[in-house]
Structure formats: structure tokens, C-alpha cells
Length: 101
Length: 400
Image (cartoon, rainbow over all chains, first blue to last red; front, side):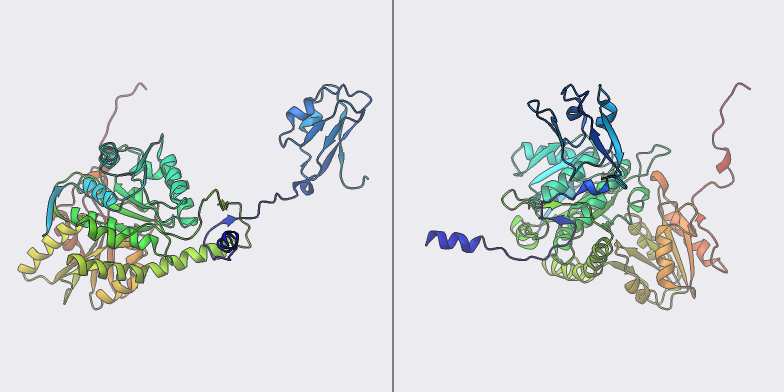
């Protein structure tokens, strides 16, 4: 009986409101804005994590166990190039999105 | 039994906010509003009002805190003046755009520069398009009544528009007058609990408010605000009516004084309206057919009511307590002119800037100028300005 009542009071109801608001918490795919994509050349990578620290969107993960240790979440990477600028070994290259695979 | 007090305009505003049982106050003191911020803090400290008081570092924050707090479902209080209102400019539009029905006394004071502490309407006129209703007060009783009625107008579910209650700095804010104070039970019944059911901040039912909104919706949201303004016209009349039944004091969006059969009428805003009525009485005694009109609601502007009231009046003087640089007239004139059209002589008079008194002589000079005008003045008349010497008032010694 108790449970039924709880269900009843928590029933969703559509309410008209005025003014700007949102109740869907989904982020938009900002990766689609990207013109250039970061591509890593692992031969010189020393796994220092500088790219991760500088990424303004915090999209880079570094797994030091692996040779190809960097993962960049390209769904949200806007291609700003800060990682490429900051890499001390200059092993990140910004490659044009269009016309490349 | 009727209960009277001697209060200045600021304290009357505080009395009304207290009786409306505001739950949160975020105010930053600025002359001539300071005593509102101070008195609110005193009554919270003394336990006379169960409210939180946030000491903020600017007016921008004062309004931001009030918006955030009111969105959690409580009535809030803040007040400001002059450059403080200007610093609020950005967030004033957030309050109106998010439909947060805050009621805020604005103690009218000139805007810098030159720095001044004294009254004119530059500050609130600069905010006339910020989406706030603007009501102007004539005396201290009016301040108390208007603040109380504004809660009802602002919080009406089809209005949801914040209200500025404008009171002239020093002329009203610091002058003591006798006024009637309602009983707490009467105010409780009239104003009621805060129960706005629109956008709401509730951790149990989260919502993002004021998110980035695309051009596919903003026009419609602005239309909603316009509809709120339109609806506020009839809501105001209903609220004024209800308040009149309770107190015997009937307010209107525009109030005429001896306008019947008048040839010439002066249109005023705020505290100068009392002086205008006094001069009208004197001139009527001399057999001159003159009247006065007080605009109470500047936003929304009562154009239909004004048109109806001034039917058959051939000459209208508008006193603007602000400059309106570069326009054909200052803000009040522009509204009156648009409402009345071109078959009437409507002159704009700039007067009372930065505390310069609009005394009986000023109003008489306005009437005299108006009645001697063969046609409408092409530009505003600076009626109480020393035009001959205006360009030479300061001299400095300089190395050349």
C-alpha cells in the first residue's frame, strides 16, 4: 500500500512553464564542430601526461601500461590544438578532418 | 481601528516588505536607498522578520542572489538606486526573462556623470526596456501601498513579471509623512504566501534554468513576456480595486486631477505630481482651465486610458525628469506623444534634474510656456535651466 502511494505521488506530469529551462541533461556533440583532429605519433611519446593536463575539456586519458597510451574522446574534442602546442616531444599533429580518414 | 505611523519613504517600503514576509534579503547600500538596506538588516537582527540577510559585494550580486533564492520558491527583497541599478542592468533582464516576479523599490537618483546623490529619473528610465513593470509613487503612503500591491501584480500566474516601485530620492525616501499601516492579518490575506509555480530550483526535481536557447524559441519567449505585460494591465486594475475595498485608497494606472473641461494639462511622474495638483488648484481659482495627470504605471504605459482621459484637451505639457539626449523628446514625452497623436500641442519640458526642485514656480512656468505656444515645440524645452549661462558655468586656469 505504501509503495503504491509513493508511485502515485511521483508520477510525472507535463507542466507548462514560461522562460528558459531544461530538464534533459545531455551534452551536445561538440566534436562535430572540429576542423582539425589531434593525431599522436607514439615513437617519441614519453607518456608524460602534459596533453592531459592542458586539455581544456579534460577529454584525454593516459594509460601508461600501453604503448598507444593516449585516448582522446573525439565525441567532444573541438580540435583546439592546445595538446599539440603543449606536447614537449612535439608528437601530436593536428590533421584536417575533411579529406582524411 | 486605523493605525497611523510617521515614516519616511524608505521605511515605508521596508514596512511593506516586512509585512509581505520576505524570506531572503540581498541588498547593497547606496544613497539614497541605504536606509532600506540598513533597516531590513536591523529588523532581521532584532528577530522581527524571519529572513536570511546576505551581505553582498555589489548590486549585480544583490539581484543575482535574489533571483536564485526566489527560484527556490520564496519571496525575496532587494532595493537599489542610480548607478546601483545600472550595475544590475544585466541581471534585471535575467529576472524578467526567467519570469522571476521580484518586487524592488528603486529610489530614483541621477546617473553619473556628473556624480550626484540627488533625485531624477535617469536611472529607472535607462531600464525602461529591461522587461520590468515600473510604477511611480507620489507620496509615502503611495510607496507603502504600491509595494504591497506589486507583489500581487508581479506574482500573478499570467503576469510573472518583476516590478520596480520607483520613489523619488530624498523627496520621498527621506521625508517623513503620516501614513496608514495595515494590520498584519490584512496583509497576510491580501498578499498571501508565495506560491509561484513556474521555473523552480529543487534538488529533488532538478532543472537547469536560463540555459542557452536557440533562435527557434527566443522570439516566442519574448512574446510570452509581452503577453505578461498585456495581462498585467487588467491584473493591476483588479488588484487596485481589491486594495481600495480594503483601504479606501483607489489607485489607477493613470490618475487625472481636475481634467474635466481643461484646456491645458500637465503630465507628471512621481513626487512632482503633488506640486502639480497644488498649482492646478491655484490656477483654477484664478479661472484658468488647467488640470494635471499623473502617470502611475510607466511600464506598461496606459496609452488607452490616457487617450480617453485627455479627449478634447488641446494642450499638454509633459515634464520629464530625465534628458532623452538626441531623441525628439525624453521618454515620458515620447509615450504621451505616441498615445495622443498630432492634433494636440504636446510640449516636452526637461526639469528637476539631479535634485533641482520642481517647485510651484516651475509648474507655473511650464503652464505659461505651454499656453503661449502657438504650435508644438520642436524639441524639449529646458524650463528650469539657465540657458544663457549654461555654456560658461565653470572656468579653470591652465598652463598654455
